[in-house]
Length: 390
Image (cartoon, rainbow, N blue to C red; front, side, top):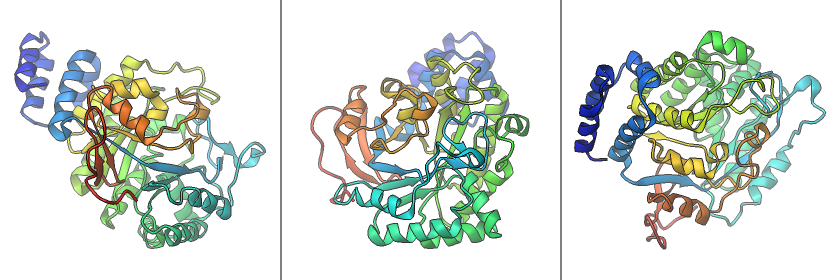
């Protein structure tokens, strides 16, 4: 949307606070935490969409990113008992859980030999027998087998447990894994940073300070990371803004975050099943406000297996510029929680078409947003920006 159109929206806004916030957005000025809460309380969806899309197009034009990736989920057996989780099985009651051996995980990696995937994403439950040395050995084997494959692995929850069990500092543990082949960190385990809410939904795992320390240390040793937030459960708008403020402050210090991923709470088969899920309107409001508030985050991702394909398309009008990757049905985390996609897999052609259908430009990227191939907004692919798709 052109600035003059936004100016018209501001002039037609009757609320003085929203008018002031709109003027700050056009002037590329940071909005405050109090103003972020005002957006949640007062701004309607079309208003938010217009300003979020303006910021998105300022940063990225029509480009919408995806990558060719697959997941390895070593286990869903976990020592922690998060009330919102439909995925894990407690270690003490693990009859219906799974635990993959190193050979089984390497078989998954080998199954992609000759295929142009660029990333393996490794996350799972926290199993006491899968320690830091087990995973370091796995990373070394993956790198030896396929050196160019980017390994994004382990939430701060998994890492915190590994480091404490091995009696290593965060810096020592991250360096050990980095030297073994770990390239970047995903953003999982952040949930909501507020300690009162965290005590109610995930009391026994790493707290906000621990999560932030792990990511800050990763940034300090040259490792880029992502960030998430679980929304739509018992938190209030102020908790969402507090969470994003902590991320924004850390990004100011390190500039190490690639992307922010709001994760919608799903209520199937977990201890919070009585809490209604957020509406699609609330989901789009969340994306739009995240794009406006997190002014120092380059990318905003909608995880399409969580939202579903059509809703992921819709999010591209509300600040989102990344819809994740092909995944190839290698993740169960959201399908087990009742997500829209029970078999989360799309071919590259399907992802490209999905983006083209809403008049955006599909761009295949590496994990760190290096452009591998850019497509036209409609029709056949353009020449690759890089000759290599590996």
